Image (cartoon, rainbow, N blue to C red; front, side, top):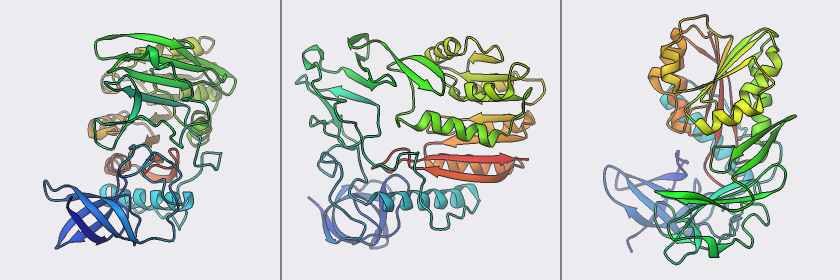
Length: 393
């Protein structure tokens, strides 16, 4: 095993810290800024090397015993920052986003020393209500190791609430299955299995779980997208309504809208005289949204790509557009279409710092001004974040 002794610098996007060896950049996982570590080189291809810290020579004061017992260089890839204090993790996340937004978006976001914000509950553990496992050749479910097909079959991940993975019916799993386990908002556990070219099977609970935001209920397939953090859907909806600044009779687009959670919140504000359009390619999401909002005629669901919907739009611009694209971001074409439509107020959401930063830069090139940025620790114990930007012109 090739080992180097490295003193690492600032955190980089993606969960590593930056070190240098003979002028070469080395991205070191499982290290904290300022630490000296012994690191195993895992990848020497290309312009950069990648490594994993396997021995901490000079630890950071922010280092603690791992809060997740199964994560680490030889463990699962779940909680890649569980060895730092939650306060340090939130600070690092904000610094990473600020760096990306300035470097890729051309905008200086002043964090003023504040870290990524809580989502209501100030706890780093037990926040996740849905998880996907894979079943190995031995019939046992597990989590993947980082960038590996190998599985860790100890399921005691600190992100999960007690009991979520207790007494799994492993006798009903098949090698190669993907196992979706969801604890819905009624406290019912659902387990659904499937896989490539396999029929989906319900092995516990039901195919659809019950998700509740405010006084509205969604019956949503266990395999469909829903926010993983137990507080996120309700919390984000309140923030979107606050930033939208809509009035009765107003209009909004909910782009990449999924099951229409934001559409529902916006519809409550614009009322029966307003209009909200929710757009997503997911048929299951649109179907669940139509059912949940059947009593809300001011919401229209469009099951299509955002690009095609925007390309076909020739009417008046809405008062606000909310975009919650996938990890790759919205990108140049979509943002140019939003700008060409004349949307004066945009709420843009991103779960990957670099993609979010690039999108912010694209809005700025279209004449938008960044009014606010907020970053949330929506995925405690990991390097992942949720970023919100309010843009106006």
